[in-house]
Length: 112
Picture 1 (spheres, rainbow, N blue to C red):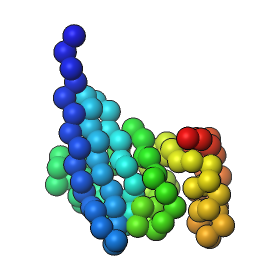
Picture 2 (cartoon, rainbow, N blue to C red):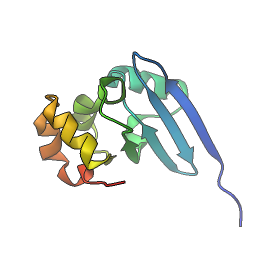
Picture 3 (spheres, rainbow, N blue to C red):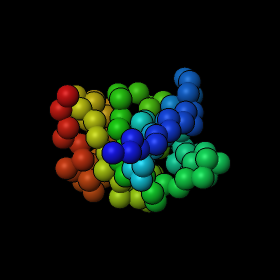
Picture 4 (cartoon, rainbow, N blue to C red):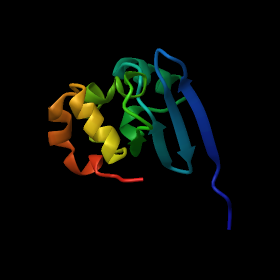
């Protein structure tokens, strides 16, 4: 059996925003989305990828440098988002747009 080739590409890292692309075979996952949607789209383009090919987004925690792009990104692309219940609740408490949750309710129920 052939081991799939994987790549881990840090698109952004730092207090202004975090976003990492993980690619294994044909699967593409973003870890965090802490820059603007446009910035993430541009960064993906520079590595030969696009948001339309992302299979899932994993959010590590609720800080804006990890979640900033989610409202716009989810309006543009129906990508499943995985995060803990505690992170989802904190996003709601901090004023995160509730329509994101209404559009993708099943995506926000992952427990770790």
